[in-house]
Amino acid sequence: MYDVLKVRRDFPILEREVNGRRLIYLDSAATSQKPRRVLRTLTEYYERHNANIHRGVHRLAEEATGLYEEARRKVARFIGAPDARGLVFTRGTTEGINLVAHAWARKFLREGDEVVLTVSEHHSNLVPWQLAARDTGARLRFVPIREDGTLDMEAAERIIGPRTRLVGCVHASNVLGTVNPVGRLAELAHESGALMLVDGAQSAPHLPVDVNALGCDFFAASGHKMLGPTGVGFLWARPELLEEMDPFLGGGEMIREVHLERSTWNEIPHKFEAGTMNIAQAIGLGAAVDYLNTLGMENVREHERRLGEYARRRLSEIEGLTVYGPAEGRTGVVAFNVPGVHPHDLSQLLDQEGIAIRSGHHCCQPLMRHLRVVATARASLYLYNTEEEVDALVGAISRAREFFGAPA
Ligand code: PMP
Image (cartoon, rainbow, N blue to C red; front, side, top):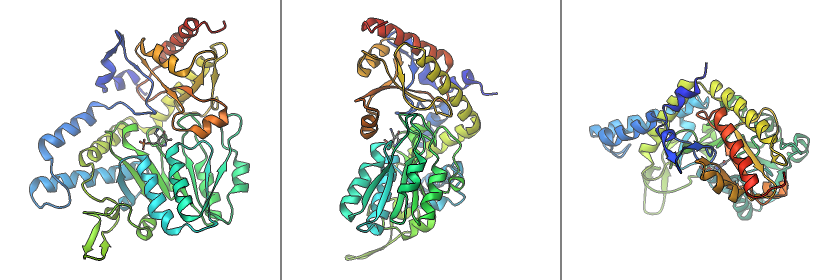
């Protein structure tokens, strides 16, 4: 039985007050809060083991290297990747996707090739491909979404074809709360001889993920959204792909031999980890994964699915309020608009009651255009949120509506 009140006790920040009220943190899609286990791991690392990795032969260097490589194996196992050589630490999802858009796309994309994305991508899975298309002459194509926010798979079947080299799709939308059928997209991609890239920023923290079961070739995510520290994330890729890709950043650690005019590359994944990495953060991410495993990702998913559906239902009861995305099977991300109240004003008013939500375009401007809005409010729930917090949100929105004189 999932005990959310027990889980909450592991997160010291949830005890703090904002504007004289107990904090209600509903912005975990932007970044999650951190459990004591992660905070303790960071402190302990700096107090006892801090050293640069892979280079020194002294005791601390060996300990730090061991902890870092153990974190790599933990994260790989967490996403069902048997071979940790496919797991590259990055700064986050954005860097992971940029890595593919440089190291793979610049080497393999040609004029006339197509990269297929969806209209609901985060800017981090759009802009790197715009730049790669500009540099290679490849063309971008987009799968639309249906009225309820789900992907139009019939259109996907038409669009993905012999010219497609890569299909890129957000696994769980940071606006709509949809979980996209990336496994089916991977099948379509592979039938056309293309590769499949999954933006897992909003799935790895919330759903059980198995990259082999999904059949994807690239999977990128951010540590800070899954209880880990900022500054670290990961890109998983099939090891054969990493072998044949060019390096991304050049510098120390990623080389085997350096001459004045040319160099050879270190073995994977080190070929993609140039310079001093975010060592403490990676080890902290390993601790976050341990914590998530203790709770069980199936339990986390079930808690959030129920809470997300509850939030959607309760919010829909507010007169005139529009909730985006499907009613069922959603994640804990709920974007909405209250007529007559700008989302920024709403967030500010909610902040006065200690409630943290997000407002804006959520780095999804094309999706906003598709929804014909400039911005939305967004409550995003995680494993530490409760129905009582959703009720408090609903109450505060109703008061905000009255404050702004919204039509009753
Ligand atoms: N993709 C999605 C779906 C996201 O929600 C985010 C973060 N908002 C990103 C990518 C980018 O993540 P990061 O900023 O950690 O690189």
